[in-house]
Image (cartoon, rainbow, N blue to C red; front, side, top):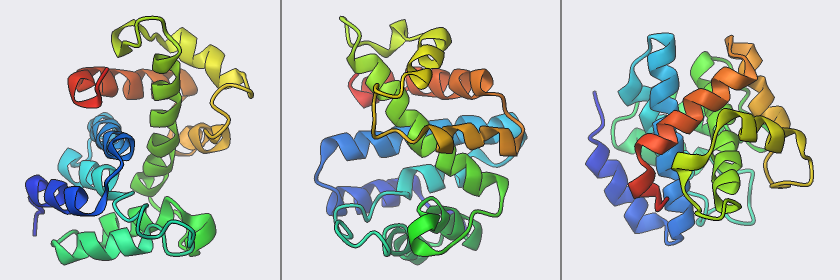
Length: 186
């Protein structure tokens, strides 16, 4: 059973007040769709995992052991398959106890943090526009530990586990976010 994206958006609108978090979820969806295309996977399925992965963030704030589990259950209630539910729970696997197993699971972990790095790199630009961000600037910012301290570089580096080099990962994520820049406010 496929899940109607509009139903997920409606669910997010009912559960997520923070506009920045909503935009992060859209960015993750775009990156996951692009990664799915890169691997010959279903972009709708992978995009669903990216879009819905944080829909429980405000509800589970302070109880990180439930973050991802609640979102997965909500997506399952809309008809998402077990692969999506698992990926969403595994994106916070250190706290939920759900270990990432598939390429999609790891891609979501990568996309989650990559979207944050790309957003931070955009916000420090004088024009605050995604269009001007380049892979080389992401590579530089990635190496700067003091930049965007909340971004877990080890999670982005897990791209190697699914057969991607860092620069290709940066390029995939950057292009995906640039493609939806108006939706992201950039």
